[in-house]
Length: 570
Image 1: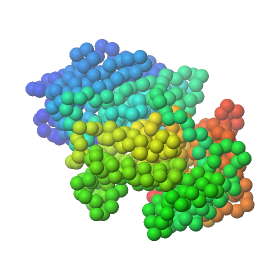
Image 2: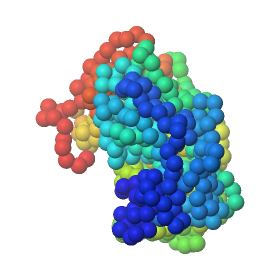
Image 3: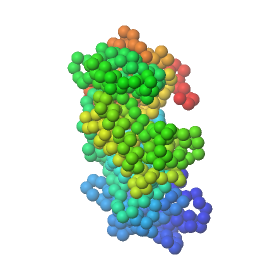
Image 4: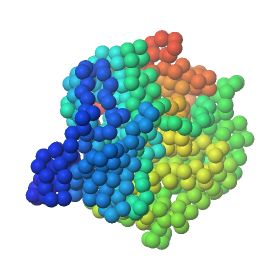
């Protein structure tokens, strides 16, 4: 979607001209260019984004955009007011719209961007093997933050919005400047803010220098974006049954997993986890979840469990459900019923599930599908539009970002502060400071190695700066199955263990050689890993050269199978 509506009407044309500073029309004012506009003299200079933008427009739907005019630090028009207030090392953006149903704000800074810059963006929720340093792509939406670097990687700067924002935010970068879009929609329609002021976003910048490596620079940006990450849960490792059972599990298989990880755990360090994944939803096979947790604990292992909290039974009162319209024309998805957490009774049912799980004795809670169930799309489908138009939540007074964050906080409250919470298909920029762990990439696989190469290695490399800055990252499981060559799996096991991130194995079985490698990996994770990082992330979406910090020792991996990367859908 371009920055302006595709509507060919005269009013739409006037709106477009007004935003560009062209002729005025009734109800649409031309926007003055700020005298503070600066240009970047070279690729190594940081962009000046901690000043008020040069232009601001508001949207009540993408077919109804209008320019705001500047007076002091306030941009106003048609009853909408956006405050862009510089503070110490940040720019705060606050919005009031007592009359209109607002969907977006578009902020624009005039900057001359070097065409030689490389640019790294983030993703809405999990990444899907698509993170990479790229040259300028003006239409590319970069959720939450972006970093720029010179072609030789000598100087890296970062720009983003603080975690816990009141809007779903994305950036664009082109030769003439920078755009920040604030999606303040409720569902796919405008939010009804009433008289309240929305704390939409706070912009921060990390200015790198020639003595700072690119990974450290992006990590520095992540630390600026997150003021209060949760205290680290310590090293997290163990088992998860999904990638060998794929739901066809049983208490006997789970306890077999617990016995395996108990036999592999190091003499010192925290106890490992055994996580019961989705198969336990078949309660005929899992009749007593509290007893299963007790049996796992008796083996010296900590019990964990998976849950899809918003999924509603078929006989649920329709008044508690989200509208099927959030799926748009994807009719096959309409049968997937989900609770609307803005309805108090529905939220109560959701949180009661977590209280029950807590009472059963599970110490790790992995919850899944909340972004998809709430917004109707997977992250790879979202692009510049996290939701499809034409629907709303029951409570229209809060933005999608606020509704997501409120749900995460409700889950935290119900699960208890001592429970380790792992978010999967959750928005990391909103879970930071609330959850302990974040699944940062789409699923790896116990069936097709290409999924692990494409999804796992990519997310581990490009979201590694979030590890310890936002939460502990989980790049997903190491699957040990007969379908995947052990020489490839062993490399994935090694790189995850060395990174110091969470490590979960999913073992169909394990021979003597594999058990030895697993025990070594567990010991490495329990000791904190080697803080290894990708050395070749500028040129490879699945980096093969990783360097241990601070020892500066490099290790090479070979991720492709002998026939190369599989080019078809995985």
